[in-house]
Image (cartoon, rainbow, N blue to C red; front, side):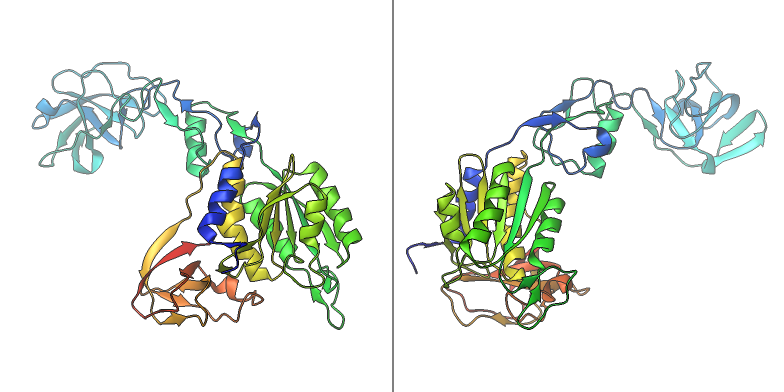
Length: 395
């Protein structure tokens, strides 16, 4: 193995150890989705704030279940009871309403015989309490959400219930995106002879946005140092991270590493023992982190998911754990060379197995929309047999 080529796990360690958390800010609750909390969030109230009925029914004393019960009032949600429940009494109650004093259970209306307008009788054999008790979920002062948690829709509900309408979160990193290559034209153009549309940059814009960061696309630089340097400088000056795709291998027109160095970027690695993604570069200037990504779309996608996404989320204060499932392969998968680990797109079948999708290599972008995840064939291993239990990194 080339001395400059490191393992993917080494690359992960270097990338994540380099990440520095950025500053914090307040975000409105309607803008907090996908952000990471910058402080613990504690409850300012008990939850539930009172004993409340878990269902529609009648609040009564368990000791009176075998007796006819006089209905003394109806308690809708949002209204306080006006009377306590004494022997032989009950109150008709709605889901979420406050349970009156004296009642120790709520009997479901489905198990109640209505004798007349003011009298009912329980006809079931027994009943659960059917009461959500004061503070059984959360007490005042309990830490409900932890610093570093990524805010999902279910967290928004908790923030709203706590009245935390402007949580303190980490700022979203600004990410500059630059494409290189004389062969590239924008998607709005029809490619001429020897040209292709630039798909990498728009894929990266979407991946950056999905990771919770803010993408800024700078366009295509031709395969000359002046053009690459101009766009790279512009992105480097105002972004927290720069992603530049193409021009990072060892060909005559692979000029990106030199441009990065001349702009004060210290390269921390230049090659990873993985396929796709071998020529990936990573480095940092005084204020900006830079990834030099391969030019093929599958390579770019895979490197982003394995390295860039966890890096951006760590900058945002969140320790990313990739979603993985363990499932058996439904057919064998192999590679010819074993020096590098290899990643393959796969789909999850309805039979609970993993099926490799048709995949022609790192330029085969059509393979990715069919895939549910990626599996890794480690270095030193050339084949997984059908039935092998594999880790599927979901995408």
